[in-house]
Length: 111
Image (cartoon, rainbow, N blue to C red; front, side, top):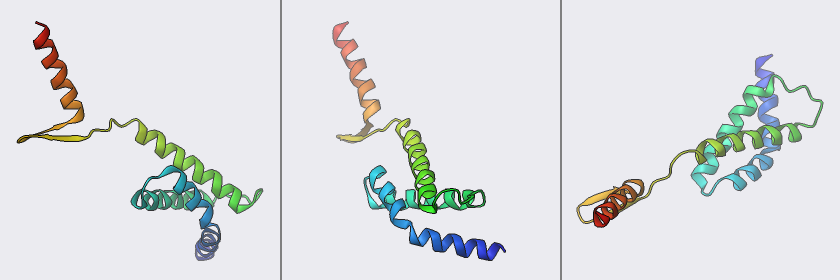
């Protein structure tokens, strides 16, 4: 029973992988992120496959699960503070550290 379920899922995923790739292209900038998102969507689809009732086409259901997964990951990643390293001489600042450094420097100038 479980083996048939896995085979059915793999067959459906293979037939409809273009839908998932479309979502990945929209929500990622490079191949590594694309592959990571594709894998995450595939995992979410497999975990939810047991609850798929067949009231809609598999492609419609997979698109919704994929889109929800991509949006969730996008929201999580957009909450992270992004930093950029800047090399000044022998000391390397992260952008957020550099902003703090310059703010402190400006306070010293005004005092």
